[in-house]
Length: 185
Image 1 (tube, rainbow, N blue to C red):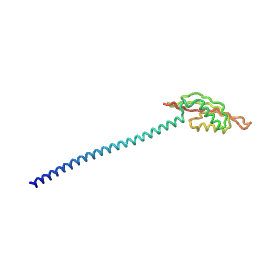
Image 2 (image 1 turned 180 degrees about the vertical axis):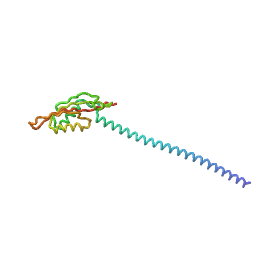
Image 3 (image 1 turned 30 degrees about the vertical axis):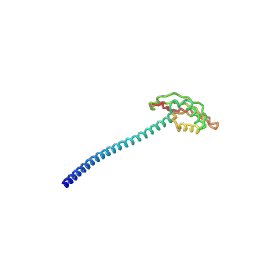
Image 4 (image 1 turned 90 degrees about the vertical axis):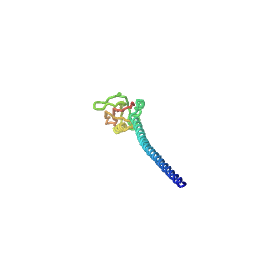
């Protein structure tokens, strides 16, 4: 009887051990499934983080682009007549020409025939300048306008030759300059 009780105890122990192993493996499978699901969620989050970084970089680039445009095409409040004329006077001083006069020709919203209309958010303004100087000085002045950090364009000019009998020969030039203002959106 002791043997039978011992055998029953061993069998019960083996059954309980088997049952314990079965339950442990089932729990292990649940834990593995949870780990797999968590890894999948982490991959999705990593993808979202990468996408967010790309979007942040794009926003930074767009902000910089807007700042560059505003530098080239200033807002209306930044382009008071006096500031623009001072810029032209500084260029004239650098080119060593005499700056006789400047005036706003008119605020233009559409261009001359064959020229595109101004896009929404921008305004075209023309300036009429009158200068005197030697030929190469006047050319230098035009170059300074065309290569300025803000967008200025010489749209036309009228060159009036000076008296060739009295050196240095001083010429007169009437220049039409076009610029644009960024009005914002």
